[in-house]
Length: 439
Ligand code: GLY
Ligand code: MN
Ligand code: MN
Image (cartoon, rainbow, N blue to C red; front, side, top):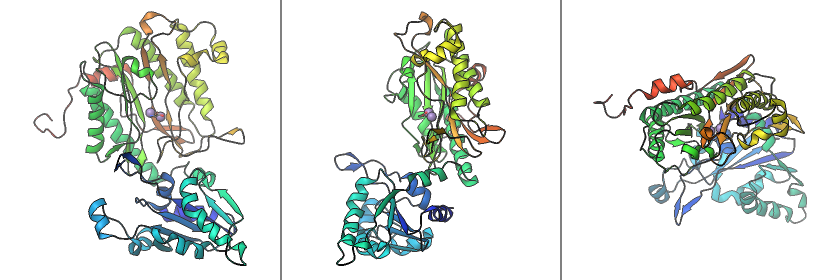
């Protein structure tokens, strides 16, 4: 799979060129401790290799894939973990050759000397400038052979990101599993929820269930917002008590074998929607259904957004939150006080996945095997000018889908979404899979 992807990129490179793609750097969390290492998604997509201090070089004219990676080092491995090592790397990862990362300035000049165009991922300037630029300078300074260095730098990001947009069957299998794990965790959180718990407890339930099913980490910082914390789109404080009579919004997904899921559900802390919560909830649910109905190959994100907006705005007018006609409110964007984000995004190795949303002003058309989220919401801030009963309510409903020729497949339908389904599930007791006496 990874060899195929390198081959595809090699074939897309211009003649007389090479491309350089770096592994992610280690990131400091505090003083001398680091964040858990997460590989750069593009580097992972091309190598399946999860170590830092590594660099892939692809050479168009020879079709070579050359890896620079960490040497084996018994002392470093005792402290920091096992390394694949240079000796094993070429065979294990299907590379043409491998060299030590520490020897890059010795070996890279011999690989790239005289090649006219150097491709890299714009945005990787720091590591590129630190590591590659001095090598290019040394080539440029080769006595009487200044044409040893490239004359052009070009960005390989568009080529690579275009190829990440339509998922292979193998990728879809991993995304399906990621979605199933996240769906089960959301159901566990719904069963566990009750007034008086902290938002942090529901976050713990989610992460526990992710890990129990083989997804150790969330794909992004989980959002667990009770009451009007749900109106903060990227709320991550997650430490407030969940109150009787409030809703709680959970936006959480896991990372499974590198692939993200991204689910949002909003449900009543006490298991029963109040009339005002129910009215707003049903508007968001109907808006999501309208957007899902427009999720079909050939359409655009804007078609889904527009379908959702018509339902959201009509609902807000019915409830006395907006006034006038649907058309005027959409034209004047009055709804932006209550719905201020897009309808969704691509999903894959990154939760906001690589993808091209428009090219030279032309919106991208959905194609089969693209994976995306559909996530309308309504967020009625406490200081909104609207009927009292709706103030402080935030609702989002988010599913992950695969685009097909005739529609789309919903990958996260395992988590209930109608009010009746949610209330029924919340009536069930939470059972801890590791406590057999309860199970
Ligand atoms: N969880 C981030 C998003 O839904 O886009
Ligand atoms: Mn999302
Ligand atoms: Mn989300």
